[in-house]
Amino acid sequence: MSTSLIFYDTRTFLKMDSNSKKELYLQYSKSIFGKIAADLDFKKDFIDLNKLNYLKNNLSYPCVIIGPGASFINDISPLIYIDLPKNELYYRVAAETSCSYLKPTEIVQQESSSKSNDNDDYELTQDMYEKKCLYFLDYPVFNKLKQKLLSRMTFFVDGQRPNCPTWLHGHTFRQALAHLANVPIRVRPWFESGPWGGEWLKSICTNLSQLSRNYAWSFEMITPENGIILSDENHHLLEFSWDLFYGSQANRILGNYEHYRLFGGSNDFPIRFDFLDTMDGGNLSIQCHPNLEYMRTNFGEKITQDETYYIVETKQHWKEEYNNDNKSSAHVYLGFHDNVDSEEFHQALLSSRREQKELNVEKYIQSIPSNIHDFFLIPNETIHASGQNQVVLEISATPYIYTFKLYDWLRLGLDGHLRPLNIERGMKNLKFDRRGEQLRCQPVTMKFEQEKYEEQYLP
Image (cartoon, rainbow, N blue to C red; front, side, top):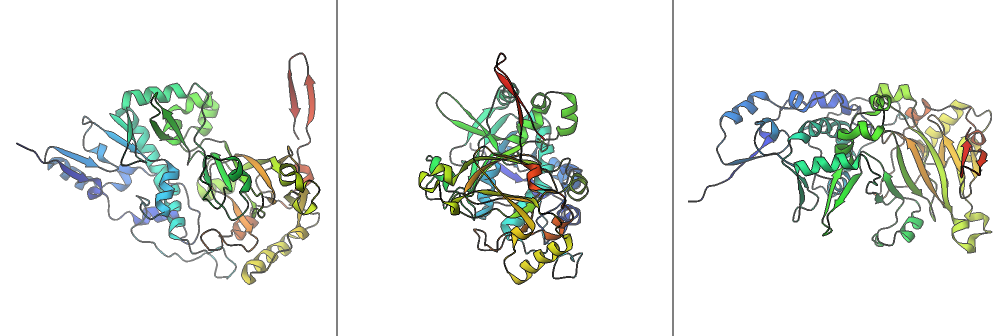
């Protein structure tokens, strides 16, 4: 005698009236920025307990409960957790086969705080809106939930290949996390095309698809998006997201209580690094990063973005035929010239955006020649950009996406749209007394031959 297996979807017990709470964190609908929903709890804020209890008391067996919140049905049934790497999620969002789970059921078109045509309003594409909802709503809420579930997981499943999923028993998975926290690891990088350059990464990463337009970014460690891959002796691969690993092992990874106190949240790892490739392309956008108070007040983050540029390669060094070609030289835009008037600069930016005319960048911002192995310090509130024809290793202390673009050379993104500018936010986060040469690293090197190491004192 066969028995039918019944499936229940957890969306049946979601609250239907939580839009206002979600909008509180998504903030203005025409901005790519929101505020981290750090104080929201999935069960408390998104589950209708009356509907949940009704389902508990009226289940037909045998059954499977599918979706976030399935664990609330009881504490004893087997629990299968299916994880999805963030870059795979973004690919599915771009293909419109996946979306934010917690996004509002309708978008509230809020009034701008400014009635001027010179505000930072921008009509978000669907892809941009989904990513905004994921970062500010889904990630903080579900990262907390998955940490609570880790000890209960009967099986952990890598869900990026639906036709051939890989899995581990929960006990084995927890042992693997504990082991990895005590050994060197490398997260899986991922690569993305951009509206500039990208030819160096494409040429040296021959195992990547050469059908891609370019590889302008190599995200080596952007922790909200990276995963870690395990392999068995038969080369079966299983990937899990960094946030699950870090959230459960932060005390071991960070190494002491003070670091854990500051950076112990599952999305709060303080270091990021990536390669920016402008080879055979254009300059990066003229930009800055917010100060700490602004970051905490407006976005709910714990730290801000201080970064460095290390010059890995330049076109003149990479290709011999360009050794003496001044048109192929590399440079970094860094710091203002002396006596730049902030309001004049502000109005020039607004005029450029409004009238779609070029900005005379070098009238205001220093352009510093760059060579292989040069090292530049870029504290928050410093105007900067990588110039064309070089590869930069960008090392940052930052949570994620908080770059205020002030000028982007009037170019279109790969989606055919102008990329959003954040002139008003940027102007509130600029120090006009920052000079480029002050920020070029000129280390004093002390060599200790007997000890076989050297110390470098940076300014």
